Length: 399
Length: 186
Image 1 (cartoon, each protein chain N blue to C red):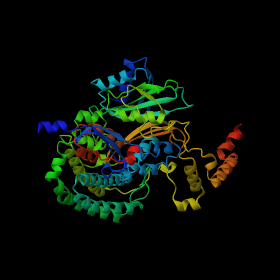
Image 2 (cartoon, rainbow over the protein chains, first blue to last red):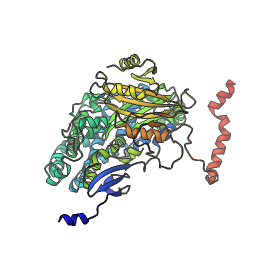
Image 3 (cartoon, rainbow over the protein chains, first blue to last red):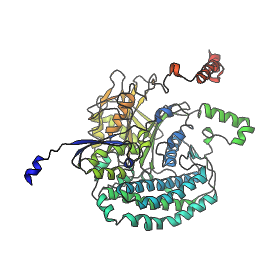
Image 4 (cartoon, each protein chain N blue to C red):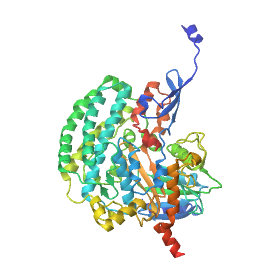
């Protein structure tokens, strides 16, 4: 036996995974140096989806740069919009009315559910558990229909505005959403968790894989469920609350071991917490305006007034061509908790109607950079599990 | 700790390095020289009362024609333990377009610095793998610099009707409100 082994010639081989690969969740390319089935070196390549969002935003008014944020993390567009608006509201010093805050919180949490559904189910699909994908997409469809009811768009919403939201929600929407929140916890327990939590194959593929310690995770700049899986309770909704998060009760689930399974568990728990937040928001929803009173500097006037009222016409014209006038000079960094992690906007303004510099701190970008650390020394099959667990969207990574 | 106190603390320790402290909407920026950036960052990371263990963001900004020093590298630091944040800005002149890398301190800085190099051409000394990241390897120029055009000049390949529109717009510029005011002021 020993003599036969000597005759086998072995060498390291290099394979290119992606950019067209079903398990890379978009156009991520990973170059893997393999020694047998073990990954020796892993080098991710990104940038295939680079559209120059930051450069484009510098040449647009504050209002018209808003739809660009839809195209970052295209499965949670509403959260990106809210992040953009929260940053600019802090910058301009606008106080958002209560009702708008609640509506936004509902939208952000609906987005979180629909994004985590994709995150978990495609992750499971890659590893071989297909059923969850089919069940969860049925529920995601219900949420997308609700989005359509509110703003007419299912994916790229552009519904929040600087200073509030575009239009009020109606009672029918709230009733339907409430019905959803009543049914959803049972669906999670009955159909999602039961499929995976005790599933022996799932446990073997995820437990003890892609372990990262709490110190390392912070040092690498991980955020969101990817960080919380390592046991760090860092959640911007709690640490630096915005919108209606201070008024609602929710827990921040954390993991213990920092492996793929714990991160999956965190996302699953967050589904329940998001559901809880939505329910509380609907119950507590106050009446009132949905747009800040000092927002006219940033908001387009209603269309019927533009056609009949001279002042509204001028306002619309100035806003479209020049952007908001009397913008202060300064800079601000504001972060919000999007489904993937921390989405930060850094604005530098020179006092004109366009941002002088808009910097996007995208969670996916940071999460891809940690991939070599997770994969090196692991098996090639674990690379798939690791890509799934950091929950990336390449639109956001490449910007 | 309040951001203002942190800024004062840095100033007390490195009086010759800190050039300015600015505050806007409760966020404090400390503008420093780039030479000792790594030492300052090491201090911010290690000092127990500051303990900035998390680098939120690192990016460049181009201030061509607006400030004496063209580039700034902006660091946003956060402490998970003390829950405070500070913004450090290091000035990088165009003729000596390089700054020390902080990858040793925060591993997460790796890709941020690569992106900054890709977009602004600022070199990071001591970076383990300084390559372009979002743009192709053979790309010329640095896209986020302010003197980099938004749209390429197609020359003769430009769509003819679009060119006519552009020319007309150029001709009509004299009637623009801003232009009219400027002329009048003269």
